[in-house]
Image (cartoon, rainbow, N blue to C red):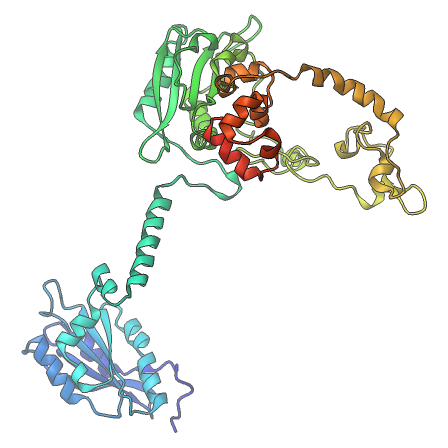
Length: 496
């Protein structure tokens, strides 16, 4: 029985072994056999092979020193085994014959980390052998060489090869795709020189009726490029100068009013209806980063924001919106108390859901804010000192009464109560287009939008004959189809 505690005991390195391997390169042995001294609980040098022979001959000499049933470690200098091998390159061979005691075999194998730590100046290549004929230079070189994809495929089935290639291709596509982070966090767009040059020319000639059209370019569409547009005094002058099938950003100066100081720039988000959905989403994703770069390049210049999806919306009125708080960089000088009151910062592209506060935090009534209103029902109560707008979730009494939310015995509204609402909704229904349109008119956004056509039901405005010829069925039968089938058929005819 071994007196050592466990198979991972931290054995000490014998001083003689340290001296042997710490000597000058010229006086070191070519190989050293290291065994476990059970009594002293140390790793000791049991034998060595002197220099003067080739590496292959050293392995042959080492094989003769190994004993069956007695595990050990062997260190072999690899100078001459490879073209770039030097005195610090060594082989660490674990000799663990199958007929040796299990505990001693495991103890010896686990001592490799002790050897690596004690001789940290050496670069070890580890190798395990259980048979004498495995202790040779060719076997060592074959086992420790760097494996190529061809080597890995040679040991795999065709199905495993196909799966590996698919995973490799997916990894390449993911690396080239836009980086979408959790929470829609703003991504950093890379600037091409043309963008900075164009913005510089715009700021230098702010009175020369110039504008800059910035668009996402590059192999992965994550670089922003810019070009100068001439003879642009206001957004109305952009008609005919913007691409109809590609989104982008337009930056142009805004004339300051008589009571206003400083310069202003309008950043117009151009997202035409005919542009691909994916391109519009990417443009929205990188918008916050583009705004940050504009603020850096513009210095004290104030930014205002607007959006347009068609040339009909390009009017001088776009240059007069209020600064967009959602696009502005948060004021880092605000006090911590104010920041805590406003709640967490909403990520770029995010929006507050109904019932959420300005910062996106849910509005939850406190335990003391409920009062009993009957046998079992409860309704919210507002503290006497709370402002009227403290809880917008419960302020809209015309939409939801207190008893209808919290009292289970509340009854439905009477017809007399619903009559004013129906009368108010009547004018809106009267404005909806009730006629028929041709397929070409329903495919043109300018036409069907101007007539107030519901975008999701454009096919219903076709005449019955045209509808049957187009979809091969009556409108009533089409309406019974699953939504995904209806959408696919509408996409085929440009009605989705």
